[in-house]
Length: 181
Image 1 (tube, rainbow, N blue to C red):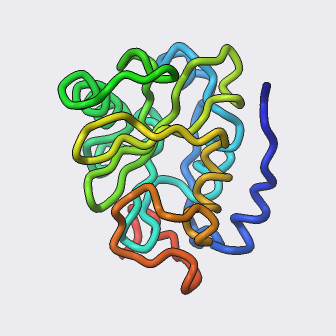
Image 2 (cartoon, rainbow, N blue to C red; image 1 turned 180 degrees about the vertical axis):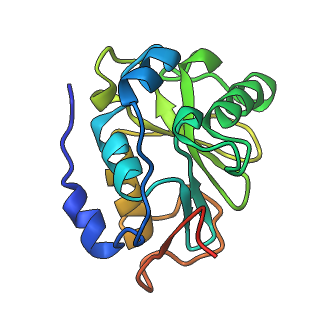
């Protein structure tokens, strides 16, 4: 079942950068990937784009929306790496049975991978998955990407599931687009 989270809560906590956002043909992107992306993610990428939150957490746009001079690896490379790491060092759980269920959309400065567990026909119902940098069983959060980011940067998810160097919730978070100086 799809879940709803008002992106305005994240927008008021962490305004998108001026000139941020990525645009392009989402239908073509989704055709290349073979699925529709969650609505909260497409709205986030359209408003914020690819970049970092407080230099501690990266969010990736689909490679197909990015220009050739964008930083690499992109979303596809991160997804391939996350799947490989899960096969090498991860532990299957009742929820996460195979690497093919993982699509990465972000990562932490301390090498944690953030993604979705693609186990539902409705992408808006995909839970967030955190693969720790040291392997082991992944953590699954029954919420969408925008709700997860809001909970993370507001300090609402505690303890933090990522080893970020920022103490979330103590100061307003800042998103920096990849093209910013």
